[in-house]
Length: 198
Image (cartoon, rainbow, N blue to C red; front, side, top):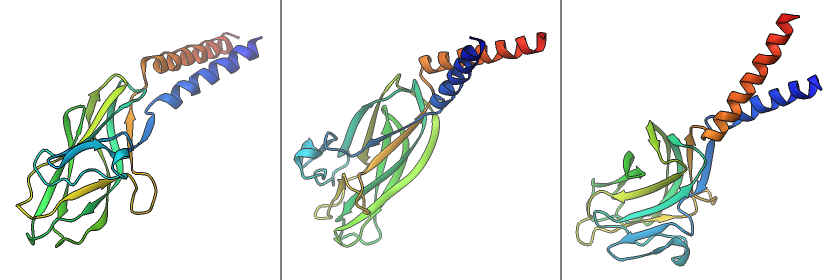
C-alpha cells in the first residue's frame, strides 16, 4: 500500500511538472483565420489558403485560440507570405503582431519590384506575461499603406517548405495543473519525512 502511495506521489509530481511552462502549437493562419482588407473580408478556407491582398494601413489577419495557460509570455512563429510590393525601390512595409490586443513584435516586408515571391517569416519573441485565462487572439496588422499601384502582400496557410503555417505559445500552468504539482510536492515531502523519522 505504501508503495502505491509513493508511486502516486511521484506520478502526480511529474504530471504537474509536465504542465508547467507548457507549449501550445496551432495552425496560423488556418482555414478559420479571418482576413480583412480594403479589398474584401473572408476566412482563409474560402480563399484558397491565402489572405486577401493587404496593401492599406490597418489590413489584418486574426484568429482566436482556446488554450490551457492562464497567461503566456512567449511565442514563436513559422509563417509565409506572397510578396508583390513594387514600384518603390528601397521601401519596406511594417507588420505588427498583437496578442490579445497588445503589441508583441513586428517584421518588415521589402519592396521586391513586383516579384511575387513566397517569403518565410519566422522567429521567437518573449514579453511580459499576457493574461488570457485560456483564450488568446493573435492578429497581424499592416502598419502603413502602399502607394497607389505599389502592390500588396498576402499571407499563406502553408510555409515555403510546404508544411502548415504555425504559431507556438508558451504559458504558465493552469490552476488545476499547479494544484496537481503542489499535491505531488506534498506527497513527496511526506515520504521523505517518514523515511527520516525511521
